[in-house]
Image (tube, rainbow, N blue to C red; front, side):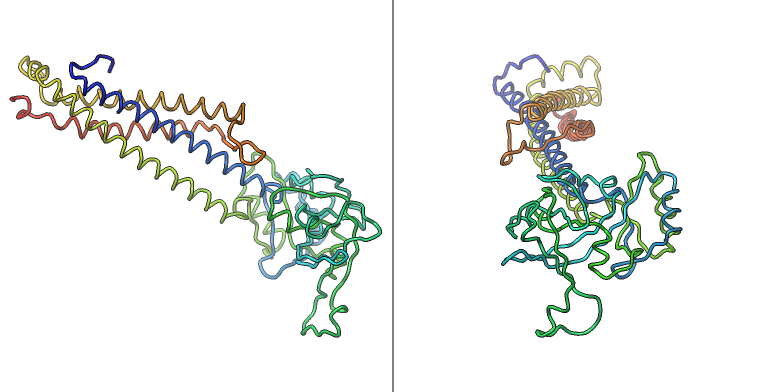
Length: 388
C-alpha cells in the first residue's frame, strides 16, 4: 500500500484510485447525513400537531365518548395524558376579506399532548371568545392580535340536509365572533390551515353535544407496548374508532421520505460502483507491473490461489483505508455544519444530523464493493500469465 512502483503511470493510477474512493465515501456519508437531517426537519412540523397516538372515528366525522369511557382511558397504563378535539371546515371573515380554514376545538389538556404551545407572538389564552390562528391565515385576513373592535368571524354550516338558496344563505350558517390572543408559525401549509378555539365553543358552533368529538389525542410514556395500548383504547370506545400512531397518521410522508432516502443511497452507490472500476484497473496494472515478482514467488512454491489472495487483500486494504479516510472527512464536514452552519437555506442552517448507522452503511458499502472489485481483479492471475 505504501511503496511506489517503478512505473510512474502505475503510481498515478493508484493515487487516483485511492482519491476516488476517499471522495466517494465522504460524499455518500455527507449526503446521508444531510438527508437524515432534512427528514428530521420535515417531520418536526408534523410533530407539533400530531400526538403520539390518535383515535379517529371509523365512519363519519364525529363520535361520542361517555364519562365512564373517559375515566377508563385515563386509567390505561402507559398513557401519560389525553386530550379531546373537534374539527370542521369553516369560513373565516374579517372586514372585506375571507378565507377557508379548519376550526379545531381543543380542551385544556391539548398542549400537554402536542408541541403547539410555541407561538410566533401573542399568548395561548383560550378564553371563551378568544382563538389562536396560523400566521398564514392572519396575513391573508389582515387581522391583528387582541383586535376587539373588529373581531374575526367564524362561519360554520348548520348540520342538516337540503340545498342552499340565495335567500336563506345567511341563515344556513352559525356565526361566532372571536378575538385572536396569539399566532402560531410552524410551516406554510399548516399556518394556513387551522384556527384553535375552546372545545365547548366549537361544539356549540357546530351544534354538537358536549360528549361529541372528532378525535382523541394521546401522550404515551417512553417505554410502552403501542399495540397493546391501541387495542385497549379501541375496546374502551366500543371499536367505533380507529387508533393510529404518529407515523400512521403521516404514512404518506414517511413513505415518501424513506423512498427518497433509499433512492439517494442507490444513486450514490451506483456512482461508487463506477468509481471502483478504477480499483479493478489499478490491481490489474499492479499485477502486470509485479509479474516477474509473482513468477519468482510461484517458482519458490507459492500457489496461484495464494498469489490471488495477495492482490485480493491489497485491493480490500486500499478500499477500506480509503473508505475510513473518506468517512473522517465527512465527519469533519458534518461537524462543521452543525457547529458553524456555513451552508444555509434562507435564514436557517441547512439541517444535517449525525447518526452512527450512516457510518456503518457507508463503510459496509465500500468494503463490500471493494471485496467484489478485488475478487474480479485478482482472478486475472493464472498459470498462463505467470509463464510469460
